[in-house]
Image (cartoon, rainbow, N blue to C red; front, side):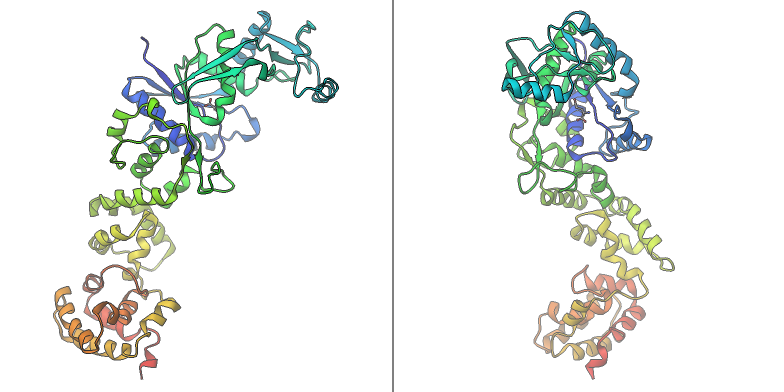
Length: 469
Ligand code: GLU
């Protein structure tokens, strides 16, 4: 048996849809495991929507999820627009054998005729008129009688009554090929053995299968993977949802987490859902893919990402966060990002951040000349009657104690105690003075890094302390 050949056939849109990414991963997993080939064909026949940078965007998006164009399993990219002549030649072959015929009826003609005959759609009216090619005439496929059974590895055998399929157009009136034809001719010439794609193409499949057969080829193995839906169970779309893979990349989702999550949309890797790619590649099977729509659950994706972030070593985390740290540096000229401090705080940041883009903001109070205070946090700092006294006593104690987190804790706890408060609550004005916020990374560690002088300066200059009287 020949090695299987898989493909994805995205149309350039300016972004790479997460559903397309999931389809790509399913194809990639099988191509890798079965020693096959993964073909990238960019279906760029819509000249108006065809920009070179969009093609690069597809290649970059694939690379981010581990599908690299320089991998030996990868073939392409091929561009559909380069094969227009071949599409037309195959269409002519169908005309020559009688499997297709020309039709000069305009959409208005068709509508009028359908209305007169009380039918919907095109009634095959030019089938036997013997028209030849001419400008303005479309070439239609002559759908044979009977039924078409699509053998789909996900959906089982799906039977279509050919009577419900009208004689579809292969070439437009200007001679240009339609999607259904171009897609099949390319799959044939690229010797694609498996067409794994989104469920929304299932209605095209009986037509495409007829084309394969009419052109004298065995149809490929079909597999239509389930739709991705949002919380309202609606198909995710550009208008309603965040569907661009790139936007997740730019927000700081880890590629490994994204890959893992995408794989689980319609397929379960087993009891343990968090799995490395190598394990999923070994076990993924189309037969196990669900038919029902898969919920693209942003909360679950965030949870996956959090797990992957926490599984990193602090050094890996700091390295992965670098692009966002670089953005922080650019946005804060004149401030120095202390990478040693970031590394020291990394384990705590890893506990808190769901995406890498959040990381700088968790610790940047350390790097800024002044923490950024917000009103609600300041209000909480001063919420207890004892806040001013606690702060004053803490300053006095911190002037003297050793500068270690344990010594600071030992100095502070009795103050909280004396005021009848739990340390966490009593800490509010201290925490806000140091970090600007009421929640954040462990305070003593932060103060240890800042040093005694800066800590005391911040404690003395927290806004609102004038009210302490
Ligand atoms: N260009 C089509 C799309 O983007 C490809 C469909 C297919 O995979 O056959 O939806």
